[in-house]
Length: 153
Image (cartoon, rainbow, N blue to C red; front, side):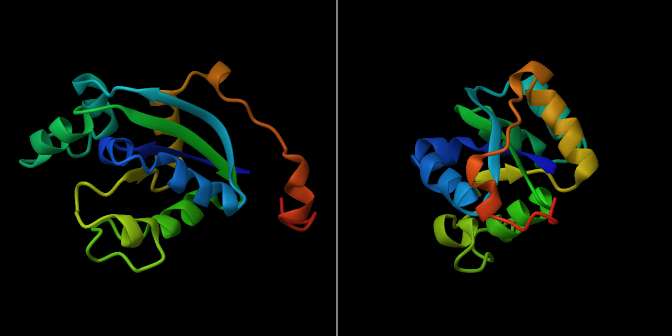
């Protein structure tokens, strides 16, 4: 099973979309193995977005991501990173296809509701930034046998 970090960004929390979007991930068969409501500090923002911290537009990103609470979560499932990113759609909500989360709920490049890790290395790094190992509760739901074939693990 693969794990990915998702952040329900401040715009998602303020618009009260966390439950609706989380339900879409659960409906897809992904497991929530960790979740918490928190504030991202400027220091954590710089760690999370280290590759962007020197860019001219970074201060606007930092102001946004630290401007309100976020819900951080770890999702687990087959090809979780790819599946989540495809469900989110294009980064810019105006360019995201209808049916994707951003296509249905976002009309902004920056206020695009949810962050998702873009690869296995990023997922491992980001999960470690937001969660201690004892906060992660892996499990096999009893419905799993009805979500995928036994040889799909």
